[in-house]
Length: 485
Image 1: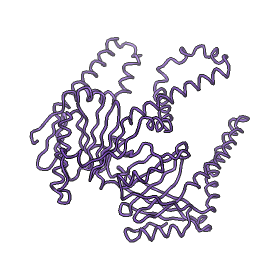
Image 2 (image 1 turned 90 degrees about the horizontal axis):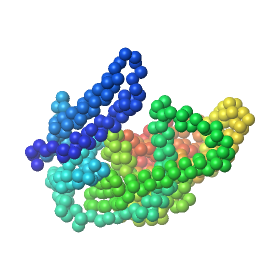
Image 3 (image 1 turned 30 degrees about the vertical axis):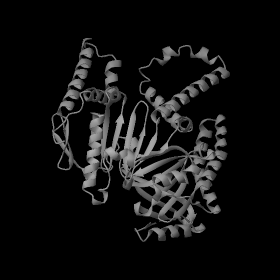
Image 4 (image 1 turned 45 degrees about the vertical axis):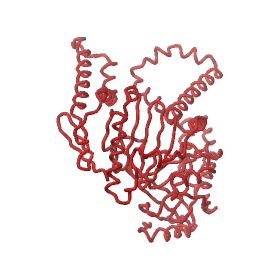
Protein backbone atom coordinates (compact mmCIF):
# COMPACT_ATOMS: atom_id res chain seq x y z
CA UNK A 1 0.00 0.00 0.00
CA UNK A 2 2.97 2.27 -0.57
CA UNK A 3 1.72 3.72 -3.86
CA UNK A 4 0.04 7.13 -3.40
CA UNK A 5 -3.72 7.01 -3.89
CA UNK A 6 -6.31 9.72 -4.49
CA UNK A 7 -9.78 9.96 -3.09
CA UNK A 8 -12.81 9.08 -5.19
CA UNK A 9 -13.64 11.92 -7.67
CA UNK A 10 -16.89 12.58 -5.78
CA UNK A 11 -14.62 14.23 -3.20
CA UNK A 12 -14.66 17.25 -5.55
CA UNK A 13 -18.40 17.65 -4.89
CA UNK A 14 -17.84 17.19 -1.16
CA UNK A 15 -15.15 19.89 -1.24
CA UNK A 16 -17.58 22.23 -3.03
CA UNK A 17 -20.27 21.62 -0.42
CA UNK A 18 -17.77 22.19 2.39
CA UNK A 19 -16.63 25.48 0.84
CA UNK A 20 -20.23 26.65 0.42
CA UNK A 21 -20.94 25.86 4.08
CA UNK A 22 -17.94 27.91 5.15
CA UNK A 23 -18.96 30.82 2.90
CA UNK A 24 -22.74 30.54 3.27
CA UNK A 25 -23.29 33.86 5.05
CA UNK A 26 -21.17 36.07 2.76
CA UNK A 27 -22.45 34.16 -0.30
CA UNK A 28 -26.08 34.75 0.69
CA UNK A 29 -25.35 38.42 1.30
CA UNK A 30 -24.05 38.74 -2.25
CA UNK A 31 -26.90 36.73 -3.76
CA UNK A 32 -29.86 38.00 -1.73
CA UNK A 33 -29.05 41.65 -1.20
CA UNK A 34 -29.02 43.57 -4.51
CA UNK A 35 -26.40 46.23 -5.15
CA UNK A 36 -27.53 49.63 -3.91
CA UNK A 37 -24.60 51.72 -5.12
CA UNK A 38 -25.58 54.04 -7.95
CA UNK A 39 -23.54 53.94 -11.10
CA UNK A 40 -22.70 50.23 -10.84
CA UNK A 41 -23.97 48.27 -13.87
CA UNK A 42 -26.53 45.54 -13.18
CA UNK A 43 -24.33 42.86 -14.73
CA UNK A 44 -21.65 43.28 -12.01
CA UNK A 45 -23.49 41.21 -9.40
CA UNK A 46 -24.07 38.15 -11.66
CA UNK A 47 -20.44 38.37 -12.74
CA UNK A 48 -19.23 38.39 -9.12
CA UNK A 49 -21.46 35.42 -8.32
CA UNK A 50 -20.19 33.50 -11.36
CA UNK A 51 -16.55 34.21 -10.40
CA UNK A 52 -17.15 33.02 -6.81
CA UNK A 53 -18.77 29.80 -8.01
CA UNK A 54 -15.97 29.21 -10.53
CA UNK A 55 -13.28 29.76 -7.88
CA UNK A 56 -15.02 27.34 -5.50
CA UNK A 57 -15.21 24.65 -8.20
CA UNK A 58 -11.59 25.12 -9.32
CA UNK A 59 -10.32 25.12 -5.73
CA UNK A 60 -12.32 21.96 -4.93
CA UNK A 61 -10.85 20.18 -7.98
CA UNK A 62 -7.28 21.24 -7.13
CA UNK A 63 -7.73 20.10 -3.52
CA UNK A 64 -8.78 16.67 -4.76
CA UNK A 65 -5.98 16.51 -7.34
CA UNK A 66 -3.27 17.46 -4.84
CA UNK A 67 -4.49 15.15 -2.05
CA UNK A 68 -2.84 11.73 -1.82
CA UNK A 69 -2.46 9.15 0.91
CA UNK A 70 -0.38 6.01 1.38
CA UNK A 71 1.02 3.61 3.97
CA UNK A 72 4.78 3.43 4.14
CA UNK A 73 7.38 2.43 6.77
CA UNK A 74 4.86 1.97 9.57
CA UNK A 75 3.25 5.34 8.97
CA UNK A 76 0.06 6.71 7.43
CA UNK A 77 1.23 9.51 5.12
CA UNK A 78 -0.87 12.30 3.64
CA UNK A 79 0.20 14.99 1.20
CA UNK A 80 -2.15 17.89 0.47
CA UNK A 81 -2.28 21.59 -0.30
CA UNK A 82 -3.03 23.56 -3.46
CA UNK A 83 -0.29 26.20 -3.25
CA UNK A 84 1.56 25.18 -0.09
CA UNK A 85 2.40 21.47 -0.04
CA UNK A 86 1.74 19.89 3.37
CA UNK A 87 2.98 16.46 4.42
CA UNK A 88 1.64 14.67 7.47
CA UNK A 89 3.07 11.40 8.82
CA UNK A 90 1.11 9.49 11.47
CA UNK A 91 2.73 6.52 13.22
CA UNK A 92 0.44 3.55 13.69
CA UNK A 93 1.11 3.24 17.41
CA UNK A 94 -0.08 6.85 17.90
CA UNK A 95 -3.50 6.21 16.37
CA UNK A 96 -6.23 6.23 19.03
CA UNK A 97 -9.37 5.61 17.02
CA UNK A 98 -10.73 5.18 13.51
CA UNK A 99 -14.13 6.67 12.73
CA UNK A 100 -15.95 5.45 9.60
CA UNK A 101 -19.12 7.26 8.52
CA UNK A 102 -21.42 7.30 5.50
CA UNK A 103 -23.14 10.54 4.56
CA UNK A 104 -25.97 10.73 2.05
CA UNK A 105 -23.61 11.46 -0.86
CA UNK A 106 -21.15 8.74 0.15
CA UNK A 107 -23.95 6.17 0.39
CA UNK A 108 -25.18 6.94 -3.14
CA UNK A 109 -21.74 5.96 -4.51
CA UNK A 110 -21.05 3.14 -1.98
CA UNK A 111 -18.30 5.17 -0.34
CA UNK A 112 -17.38 6.05 3.24
CA UNK A 113 -15.61 8.83 5.10
CA UNK A 114 -12.71 7.75 7.31
CA UNK A 115 -11.32 9.84 10.19
CA UNK A 116 -8.06 8.85 11.87
CA UNK A 117 -7.43 10.40 15.29
CA UNK A 118 -4.46 10.37 17.61
CA UNK A 119 -4.51 12.49 20.77
CA UNK A 120 -7.32 15.01 21.16
CA UNK A 121 -6.80 18.10 19.06
CA UNK A 122 -8.55 20.89 17.24
CA UNK A 123 -9.29 18.62 14.28
CA UNK A 124 -8.96 15.02 13.09
CA UNK A 125 -5.41 14.04 12.17
CA UNK A 126 -6.45 12.49 8.84
CA UNK A 127 -9.75 12.78 6.98
CA UNK A 128 -10.43 10.70 3.87
CA UNK A 129 -13.76 12.11 2.74
CA UNK A 130 -14.52 9.62 -0.04
CA UNK A 131 -12.98 6.15 -0.29
CA UNK A 132 -14.50 2.75 -1.05
CA UNK A 133 -15.74 0.54 1.78
CA UNK A 134 -13.23 -2.15 0.84
CA UNK A 135 -10.34 0.33 1.01
CA UNK A 136 -11.56 1.59 4.40
CA UNK A 137 -11.76 -1.97 5.74
CA UNK A 138 -8.30 -2.77 4.40
CA UNK A 139 -6.83 0.36 5.94
CA UNK A 140 -8.48 -0.39 9.27
CA UNK A 141 -7.30 -4.02 9.23
CA UNK A 142 -3.79 -3.15 8.06
CA UNK A 143 -3.29 -0.46 10.70
CA UNK A 144 -4.58 -2.78 13.45
CA UNK A 145 -2.34 -5.59 12.24
CA UNK A 146 0.75 -3.36 12.15
CA UNK A 147 0.00 -1.98 15.62
CA UNK A 148 -0.35 -5.50 17.01
CA UNK A 149 2.88 -6.59 15.31
CA UNK A 150 4.72 -3.77 17.05
CA UNK A 151 3.26 -4.65 20.46
CA UNK A 152 4.17 -8.16 21.74
CA UNK A 153 1.30 -8.15 24.22
CA UNK A 154 -1.17 -7.81 21.34
CA UNK A 155 0.25 -10.36 18.89
CA UNK A 156 -2.55 -12.79 19.56
CA UNK A 157 -5.02 -10.20 18.29
CA UNK A 158 -6.58 -11.41 15.05
CA UNK A 159 -7.06 -9.28 11.99
CA UNK A 160 -10.17 -8.21 10.16
CA UNK A 161 -11.13 -11.62 8.79
CA UNK A 162 -11.56 -12.96 12.35
CA UNK A 163 -13.30 -9.86 13.67
CA UNK A 164 -16.75 -11.45 13.74
CA UNK A 165 -15.49 -14.50 15.62
CA UNK A 166 -13.77 -12.44 18.31
CA UNK A 167 -16.54 -9.87 18.73
CA UNK A 168 -20.03 -9.88 20.12
CA UNK A 169 -22.94 -7.47 19.99
CA UNK A 170 -23.59 -6.50 23.60
CA UNK A 171 -26.10 -3.69 23.16
CA UNK A 172 -28.63 -2.69 20.53
CA UNK A 173 -31.14 0.14 20.90
CA UNK A 174 -34.60 -0.89 19.74
CA UNK A 175 -36.85 1.44 17.76
CA UNK A 176 -39.34 2.00 20.63
CA UNK A 177 -36.41 2.79 22.94
CA UNK A 178 -35.06 5.25 20.38
CA UNK A 179 -38.39 7.07 20.26
CA UNK A 180 -38.46 7.17 24.06
CA UNK A 181 -34.89 8.48 24.12
CA UNK A 182 -35.64 11.19 21.54
CA UNK A 183 -38.93 12.18 23.17
CA UNK A 184 -37.29 12.66 26.59
CA UNK A 185 -34.13 14.39 25.37
CA UNK A 186 -33.39 18.10 25.20
CA UNK A 187 -33.21 18.04 21.40
CA UNK A 188 -36.36 20.16 21.07
CA UNK A 189 -34.64 23.06 22.83
CA UNK A 190 -31.57 22.80 20.60
CA UNK A 191 -33.77 22.48 17.50
CA UNK A 192 -35.89 25.51 18.43
CA UNK A 193 -32.94 27.71 19.43
CA UNK A 194 -31.14 26.80 16.20
CA UNK A 195 -34.16 27.77 14.10
CA UNK A 196 -34.54 31.09 15.94
CA UNK A 197 -30.82 31.83 15.59
CA UNK A 198 -30.95 31.09 11.84
CA UNK A 199 -34.00 33.29 11.27
CA UNK A 200 -32.49 36.12 13.31
CA UNK A 201 -29.54 36.23 10.90
CA UNK A 202 -31.89 37.19 8.08
CA UNK A 203 -34.52 39.28 9.82
CA UNK A 204 -33.61 42.28 7.66
CA UNK A 205 -33.94 40.30 4.43
CA UNK A 206 -37.28 38.59 5.13
CA UNK A 207 -40.27 40.94 4.58
CA UNK A 208 -41.95 40.28 7.92
CA UNK A 209 -44.01 43.48 7.72
CA UNK A 210 -45.52 42.47 4.38
CA UNK A 211 -46.09 38.89 5.50
CA UNK A 212 -47.80 39.95 8.72
CA UNK A 213 -49.38 43.18 7.51
CA UNK A 214 -52.73 41.98 8.82
CA UNK A 215 -51.39 40.87 12.20
CA UNK A 216 -53.94 43.14 13.95
CA UNK A 217 -56.75 41.01 12.54
CA UNK A 218 -54.85 37.89 13.57
CA UNK A 219 -54.63 39.08 17.17
CA UNK A 220 -58.37 39.83 17.19
CA UNK A 221 -59.07 36.11 16.69
CA UNK A 222 -58.74 35.82 20.44
CA UNK A 223 -56.49 34.36 23.08
CA UNK A 224 -57.72 30.80 22.56
CA UNK A 225 -56.82 30.75 18.85
CA UNK A 226 -53.41 32.29 19.50
CA UNK A 227 -52.70 29.79 22.26
CA UNK A 228 -53.79 26.92 20.02
CA UNK A 229 -51.57 28.20 17.21
CA UNK A 230 -48.56 28.41 19.56
CA UNK A 231 -49.18 24.88 20.89
CA UNK A 232 -49.44 23.45 17.37
CA UNK A 233 -46.17 25.19 16.40
CA UNK A 234 -44.40 23.83 19.51
CA UNK A 235 -45.79 20.35 18.83
CA UNK A 236 -44.48 20.49 15.25
CA UNK A 237 -41.02 21.50 16.50
CA UNK A 238 -41.14 18.71 19.10
CA UNK A 239 -42.06 16.09 16.49
CA UNK A 240 -39.33 17.28 14.10
CA UNK A 241 -36.71 17.26 16.87
CA UNK A 242 -37.78 13.76 17.95
CA UNK A 243 -37.64 12.39 14.40
CA UNK A 244 -34.22 13.95 13.83
CA UNK A 245 -32.86 12.16 16.92
CA UNK A 246 -34.40 8.84 15.84
CA UNK A 247 -32.86 9.17 12.37
CA UNK A 248 -29.48 10.11 13.83
CA UNK A 249 -29.28 7.16 16.27
CA UNK A 250 -31.18 4.52 14.27
CA UNK A 251 -29.65 1.02 14.33
CA UNK A 252 -27.51 1.98 17.33
CA UNK A 253 -25.28 -1.02 18.13
CA UNK A 254 -22.34 -1.58 20.46
CA UNK A 255 -19.90 -4.39 19.59
CA UNK A 256 -17.16 -5.50 21.98
CA UNK A 257 -13.86 -7.09 20.93
CA UNK A 258 -10.87 -7.98 23.09
CA UNK A 259 -9.27 -4.56 22.72
CA UNK A 260 -11.89 -2.26 21.21
CA UNK A 261 -15.45 -1.04 21.36
CA UNK A 262 -17.15 -0.46 18.00
CA UNK A 263 -20.20 1.83 18.03
CA UNK A 264 -22.34 2.14 14.90
CA UNK A 265 -25.48 4.18 14.31
CA UNK A 266 -27.40 6.28 11.81
CA UNK A 267 -30.06 5.99 9.12
CA UNK A 268 -29.28 8.75 6.61
CA UNK A 269 -25.68 9.16 7.78
CA UNK A 270 -24.20 5.88 8.95
CA UNK A 271 -21.29 6.12 11.34
CA UNK A 272 -18.95 3.56 12.92
CA UNK A 273 -16.55 4.61 15.64
CA UNK A 274 -13.78 2.34 16.92
CA UNK A 275 -12.52 3.14 20.43
CA UNK A 276 -9.54 1.37 22.05
CA UNK A 277 -10.55 0.21 25.52
CA UNK A 278 -7.24 1.27 27.05
CA UNK A 279 -7.95 4.88 26.03
CA UNK A 280 -11.20 5.06 28.03
CA UNK A 281 -10.80 7.37 31.01
CA UNK A 282 -14.18 7.03 32.70
CA UNK A 283 -17.94 6.65 32.39
CA UNK A 284 -20.53 9.40 32.76
CA UNK A 285 -24.17 8.60 33.59
CA UNK A 286 -26.70 11.34 32.84
CA UNK A 287 -30.29 11.47 34.15
CA UNK A 288 -32.45 14.45 33.21
CA UNK A 289 -35.60 15.59 35.00
CA UNK A 290 -37.85 13.37 32.88
CA UNK A 291 -35.76 10.20 32.75
CA UNK A 292 -34.71 9.97 36.38
CA UNK A 293 -38.25 9.40 37.78
CA UNK A 294 -38.73 6.74 35.09
CA UNK A 295 -35.53 4.93 36.08
CA UNK A 296 -33.83 5.72 32.75
CA UNK A 297 -30.38 7.08 31.98
CA UNK A 298 -27.94 7.90 29.17
CA UNK A 299 -24.34 6.67 29.44
CA UNK A 300 -21.28 8.31 27.86
CA UNK A 301 -17.67 7.20 27.48
CA UNK A 302 -14.95 9.67 28.42
CA UNK A 303 -11.84 8.88 26.40
CA UNK A 304 -8.57 10.50 25.40
CA UNK A 305 -9.44 11.24 21.81
CA UNK A 306 -11.77 13.19 19.56
CA UNK A 307 -11.34 16.58 17.93
CA UNK A 308 -12.88 20.04 18.14
CA UNK A 309 -13.81 19.76 14.48
CA UNK A 310 -16.15 16.88 15.29
CA UNK A 311 -18.07 17.81 18.44
CA UNK A 312 -19.75 14.41 18.68
CA UNK A 313 -16.40 12.64 18.95
CA UNK A 314 -15.69 14.52 22.19
CA UNK A 315 -18.62 12.87 23.97
CA UNK A 316 -19.20 9.27 22.92
CA UNK A 317 -22.64 7.87 23.72
CA UNK A 318 -22.40 4.27 24.90
CA UNK A 319 -26.08 3.72 25.78
CA UNK A 320 -28.54 6.30 24.41
CA UNK A 321 -31.23 5.05 26.79
CA UNK A 322 -31.05 2.26 29.34
CA UNK A 323 -32.85 1.32 32.53
CA UNK A 324 -30.74 1.97 35.60
CA UNK A 325 -31.44 -1.54 36.95
CA UNK A 326 -29.90 -3.06 33.80
CA UNK A 327 -26.86 -0.77 33.81
CA UNK A 328 -24.48 -2.77 36.09
CA UNK A 329 -24.94 -5.91 33.99
CA UNK A 330 -24.32 -4.11 30.68
CA UNK A 331 -21.26 -2.29 32.00
CA UNK A 332 -19.91 -5.65 33.24
CA UNK A 333 -20.26 -7.08 29.70
CA UNK A 334 -18.48 -4.17 28.01
CA UNK A 335 -16.16 -2.59 30.60
CA UNK A 336 -15.87 -4.92 33.61
CA UNK A 337 -13.29 -2.67 35.27
CA UNK A 338 -16.06 -0.07 35.73
CA UNK A 339 -18.59 -2.54 37.12
CA UNK A 340 -20.13 -1.13 40.26
CA UNK A 341 -23.45 -1.33 42.03
CA UNK A 342 -22.57 0.45 45.26
CA UNK A 343 -24.82 2.95 47.00
CA UNK A 344 -23.76 6.57 47.08
CA UNK A 345 -22.92 8.27 50.38
CA UNK A 346 -25.15 11.38 50.60
CA UNK A 347 -24.01 14.78 51.78
CA UNK A 348 -25.11 15.90 55.29
CA UNK A 349 -28.50 17.52 55.95
CA UNK A 350 -26.86 20.72 57.17
CA UNK A 351 -25.64 21.31 53.61
CA UNK A 352 -29.21 21.89 52.33
CA UNK A 353 -29.30 25.47 53.65
CA UNK A 354 -26.19 26.32 51.63
CA UNK A 355 -27.73 24.98 48.41
CA UNK A 356 -30.84 27.12 49.01
CA UNK A 357 -28.74 30.15 49.95
CA UNK A 358 -26.72 29.96 46.72
CA UNK A 359 -29.91 29.96 44.65
CA UNK A 360 -31.29 33.01 46.44
CA UNK A 361 -27.95 34.78 46.14
CA UNK A 362 -28.43 34.89 42.35
CA UNK A 363 -32.22 34.90 42.18
CA UNK A 364 -33.13 37.85 44.43
CA UNK A 365 -31.32 40.53 42.32
CA UNK A 366 -32.88 39.09 39.14
CA UNK A 367 -36.40 39.07 40.59
CA UNK A 368 -35.91 42.59 41.93
CA UNK A 369 -34.92 43.91 38.50
CA UNK A 370 -37.82 42.13 36.78
CA UNK A 371 -40.35 43.46 39.30
CA UNK A 372 -39.00 47.00 38.90
CA UNK A 373 -39.07 47.08 35.10
CA UNK A 374 -42.26 45.07 34.49
CA UNK A 375 -44.65 46.27 37.19
CA UNK A 376 -47.32 45.17 37.97
CA UNK A 377 -46.86 41.91 35.99
CA UNK A 378 -43.32 41.64 37.29
CA UNK A 379 -44.64 40.45 40.66
CA UNK A 380 -45.46 37.14 38.96
CA UNK A 381 -41.73 36.43 38.91
CA UNK A 382 -41.93 35.76 42.66
CA UNK A 383 -43.30 32.38 41.55
CA UNK A 384 -39.67 31.56 40.75
CA UNK A 385 -38.93 31.37 44.49
CA UNK A 386 -40.57 27.97 45.15
CA UNK A 387 -39.05 26.68 41.90
CA UNK A 388 -35.61 27.78 43.11
CA UNK A 389 -36.14 26.02 46.45
CA UNK A 390 -37.20 22.84 44.65
CA UNK A 391 -34.17 23.07 42.34
CA UNK A 392 -31.84 23.52 45.32
CA UNK A 393 -33.40 20.50 47.04
CA UNK A 394 -32.93 18.38 43.90
CA UNK A 395 -29.25 19.35 43.73
CA UNK A 396 -28.80 18.58 47.42
CA UNK A 397 -30.59 15.23 47.17
CA UNK A 398 -28.58 14.00 44.15
CA UNK A 399 -25.14 14.99 45.48
CA UNK A 400 -23.05 12.13 46.79
CA UNK A 401 -19.90 10.04 46.50
CA UNK A 402 -18.65 6.46 46.71
CA UNK A 403 -15.41 4.50 46.61
CA UNK A 404 -15.49 0.95 45.25
CA UNK A 405 -12.01 -0.58 45.09
CA UNK A 406 -10.09 1.47 42.51
CA UNK A 407 -13.19 3.40 41.41
CA UNK A 408 -14.33 6.82 42.57
CA UNK A 409 -17.93 7.89 41.94
CA UNK A 410 -18.98 11.52 42.22
CA UNK A 411 -22.61 12.51 41.73
CA UNK A 412 -24.03 16.01 41.33
CA UNK A 413 -26.75 17.90 39.49
CA UNK A 414 -27.03 21.17 37.61
CA UNK A 415 -30.12 20.53 35.48
CA UNK A 416 -29.44 16.84 34.83
CA UNK A 417 -27.93 14.48 37.38
CA UNK A 418 -24.37 13.46 36.51
CA UNK A 419 -22.54 10.48 37.97
CA UNK A 420 -18.88 10.30 36.97
CA UNK A 421 -17.10 6.96 37.48
CA UNK A 422 -13.30 7.19 37.40
CA UNK A 423 -10.41 4.78 37.89
CA UNK A 424 -7.80 5.95 40.36
CA UNK A 425 -5.03 5.52 37.78
CA UNK A 426 -6.92 7.71 35.29
CA UNK A 427 -7.58 10.64 37.61
CA UNK A 428 -5.41 13.61 36.69
CA UNK A 429 -5.95 15.59 39.88
CA UNK A 430 -8.17 15.92 42.92
CA UNK A 431 -8.91 19.30 44.46
CA UNK A 432 -10.19 19.62 48.02
CA UNK A 433 -11.19 23.05 49.26
CA UNK A 434 -13.32 24.75 51.90
CA UNK A 435 -14.39 28.33 52.47
CA UNK A 436 -14.73 30.12 55.80
CA UNK A 437 -18.48 29.44 55.78
CA UNK A 438 -17.93 25.76 55.02
CA UNK A 439 -15.30 25.50 57.75
CA UNK A 440 -17.88 26.57 60.35
CA UNK A 441 -20.10 23.61 59.39
CA UNK A 442 -17.21 21.17 58.90
CA UNK A 443 -18.06 20.61 55.26
CA UNK A 444 -15.96 20.98 52.12
CA UNK A 445 -16.01 20.67 48.33
CA UNK A 446 -14.08 18.07 46.39
CA UNK A 447 -13.55 17.69 42.64
CA UNK A 448 -11.72 15.20 40.43
CA UNK A 449 -10.73 15.56 36.78
CA UNK A 450 -9.97 13.05 34.05
CA UNK A 451 -8.82 13.46 30.46
CA UNK A 452 -11.76 13.83 28.07
CA UNK A 453 -11.31 14.78 24.43
CA UNK A 454 -9.16 17.89 24.12
CA UNK A 455 -9.89 19.08 27.68
CA UNK A 456 -10.89 17.48 30.98
CA UNK A 457 -14.10 16.20 32.50
CA UNK A 458 -14.60 17.31 36.09
CA UNK A 459 -16.78 15.70 38.72
CA UNK A 460 -17.53 17.81 41.78
CA UNK A 461 -19.50 17.44 44.98
CA UNK A 462 -20.11 20.58 47.04
CA UNK A 463 -20.69 20.73 50.81
CA UNK A 464 -19.90 17.13 51.71
CA UNK A 465 -18.61 16.02 55.08
CA UNK A 466 -15.04 17.20 55.57
CA UNK A 467 -14.08 13.79 56.95
CA UNK A 468 -15.40 12.22 53.71
CA UNK A 469 -13.14 14.53 51.70
CA UNK A 470 -10.21 13.29 53.77
CA UNK A 471 -11.20 9.68 53.05
CA UNK A 472 -11.12 10.37 49.31
CA UNK A 473 -7.83 12.22 49.71
CA UNK A 474 -6.18 9.34 51.56
CA UNK A 475 -7.55 6.86 48.97
CA UNK A 476 -6.03 8.87 46.12
CA UNK A 477 -2.84 10.14 47.76
CA UNK A 478 -0.71 7.02 47.20
CA UNK A 479 -1.07 7.54 43.44
CA UNK A 480 -1.00 11.30 42.95
CA UNK A 481 -0.56 14.58 44.73
CA UNK A 482 -3.71 16.34 45.94
CA UNK A 483 -4.37 20.06 45.54
CA UNK A 484 -5.77 21.67 48.68
CA UNK A 485 -7.17 25.17 48.99
